[in-house]
Amino acid sequence: MTRPFVVDIHTHVYPPSYMEMLRARKTVPYIHDPKDNGTPRLIILSSDDDPAIPIDERGRPVDSSYSDTNVKLDFMQNHGINCSVISLANPWLDFLSPEEAHTWAKRINDDLNSTCMNINQDADPDSKLPLREKRTLFAFGALPLSAPTPDIIVEEIYRLSSLSHIRGVIMGTSGLGSGLDDPKLDPVWEALEKSQQLLFLHPHYGLPDEAFGGPETTARYGHVLPLALGFPLETTIAVTRMLLSRVFDRFPRLRILLAHSGGTIPFLAGRIESCIAHERKFKENGGDVPGPQRSIWEVLKTNIYLDAVVYGKAGLQAAISAGSTDRLLFGTDHPFFPPLDGQDEKWLSVITNYTAIDEALKEDQASVAAMLGENAVRILDLK
Ligand code: 5CU
Image 1 (cartoon, rainbow, N blue to C red):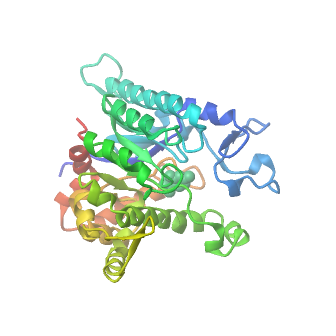
Image 2: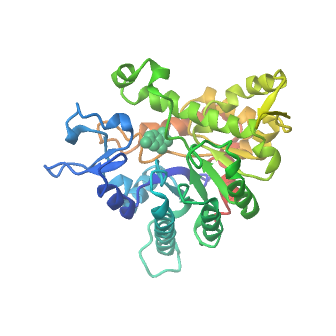
């Protein structure tokens, strides 16, 4: 049996230029270099920036796996991944001032594009350069969401369409600052729809500590509550707000890839649909407006793609049932969730996702191959 072609569509980077920009900052997010030449620390969440914690221990270590493409290529090799669609990791460019947002977006996007181009030239069998067992890279671009006007974001979306190795955009859930049901985002949805660029929607902000019992409770359990629950619920709320504000009615050809198998959308879709059906009134600008016209089930089958980064058969089965096997795409979330002892060649987080796919689709090798790579090649046009 030939091994399927594997594409990782959920794999992040902090390009060196982005790391330098974070190094120059003193407020969250920023990079701190410990005095003993230890691994740099990324202080990424405001809860990480606790003055009670010594600065050298704040946040999380960010080793070379976050910014060195060769480390990414080795990881791909070790995990049987042929192609990766890399994306800037959270919090993307959300925190930049309006004046600097576009310049940084162009710089980061050009960096990502040329990194992919250089690697793919190396992978070309006709190239004189050494072959690295034909590992290839593409990328999702980042958007200057804090730019002074949406036209600048729109301009960058169209510019990204012209870059050879960019295959869509990654974005968080805050939109222009008021969430994804903000009508001011309509030009952005329109540009994404017209250019048919895939939007990879990814969480960063989670839920307020109060949702978990307050800051002390959250801190007691490390990153478990924010990452296991805060992230998926953030995505669920963001997409439900898009649905309720009729984004998918106005932009029926919008294509969105949801991180972490859509948060809890596949599991809660029936409940969301039922609550919409039983709601008498939707209000906008003081008046009554109709609710969403297209059902969440239709949106899941036409607008939404899901990654398969859910670490279990039950969650994956919900995603398959709500979407379909030809709308799910394999991902690893590299370099997040590395082995804790730093030793294992194979990462537990990646094996868990491979195993979930095998267990959910045991008898259906065609769907396994689709989910592992063929869907991504088709949906993202990865030649
Ligand atoms: O689970 C994840 O996707 C992540 C991520 O992307 N960024 C992060 O800071 N932690 C976990």
